[in-house]
Image 1 (spheres, chains in turn purple, brown):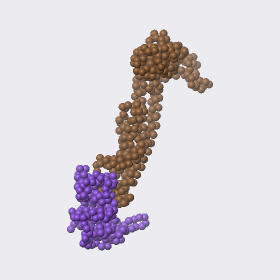
Image 2: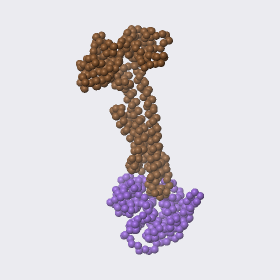
Image 3: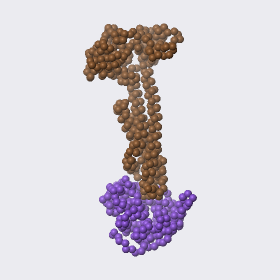
Image 4: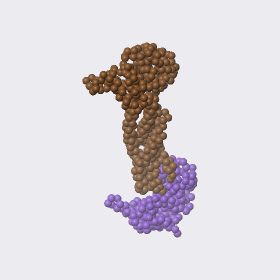
Length: 236
Length: 399
């Protein structure tokens, strides 16, 4: 098995004035390629911090983190940016689309920073849009789309660079449960197509889609178990 | 991310707030417009001065009576002490003065049919035309015979012609000068405005002006033509000694007349213009600085409004310099638009206000755009730097 993510004794301490908060207290974690993992935990458990570090948005205070072959500690800010655009696809709770820009341009954004020429960008973005079932919404701006559609655009943006890892932070948090299920079904399809998926949530029924559930408490891994076989309805 | 894409991006973002962009640029535009105005005005004036200098030459001296004094204080009144004989004396006694033209001019009304115009009536001799380079475009100047006969003949300046006649030839028409009938025999070439308007004049024989129109026997000016401009010192010495003797001035008395080079007032115009130009350029610099501060301000607001966008871009792979260039391009474009506004405004202003026509100072227009874009970049450095170095996670969470 190829380990995509390897963490050893990873800690993160936030210093605010004289108070220091230990968000992660020593995480040892290995996630293989093509896994579907849910990270759960109450608020304050460190799951967002872990997510940020996995996504190379934040640096650990101590310990090691390998993403593929790269030791994150050694990398420059530029290299980290490149890894974010090349290897990781982010899906956020609040979608985080650029409001003034069309669906297609939003999706093409990561490709711009990877230096793809405009024609290629447009083609790849259109393909990604087709994959999330919104091929007919190319020129729509985010505010002309429903929440579910916006999240699909965001997923298409995460997909467009063919990343090793799709990182979803409460992807259904701003959606009603029916739309949320549709989004989860879409993520399931992506996993079935071979993407590694990590999803952060505090909803057990969302986590239940994953094959493996990691529970955090007080900055430590409390449990790391295969998900129970579940019989929640699926869109496909 | 290519430069052209950055520009497209900047345009997109500026379009989102067009009013703010335009308002902030007005200050800068005024500065640029002022610079262009000064430049064009300067070039225009210089051109006219050069033309005038060529037309009248610098070898003519203008002798006028001095001001009378009351208990040592200068009054506004001119003395009445220049005579035609003295003009003749100058030519007779000086080696370097080849011609001296007597001139008497005064104000008066000129009428043709129902039209009326108040102008300057200048009496002189036929020699005036070649000394002052004033030639008829139509008709002729008066002759020596008409001078001795005190003939009622007149030559019109173009302004007077335009005021009295509607596009018909004035030759052979009878006009009334100070209620006396005169035959129009010539129309002068236009000279163009400088200090005063030399086209707003009517020329008549000096004998007619002195005896028939004004009833005087003195002159208001003698135009003395030198052999060449290099003879100035000698000519001045001759004029002073001849006139002082003729006016019986004691050894320690001041001159009761003034001698000016014909081109003297042009130098004054030139100096005044340069002074004005310096002043306006200082104002322009101030408004450019203010404009730069305005751009920096707008860019700071723009960055603050788009913290989330910066977070998103950074999260999905934008490097710091991508963000830096994005905002620098935006501020550069702001400056550039300020330039367009300023150059456009300046050209329009010049067109309507000083009738500069097609006089486009291309290098200055290019400098203007360069300066504006430069100010834009300079003003954008700090905001762009702030944007690029924002903490990604904080920016993403920003509401």
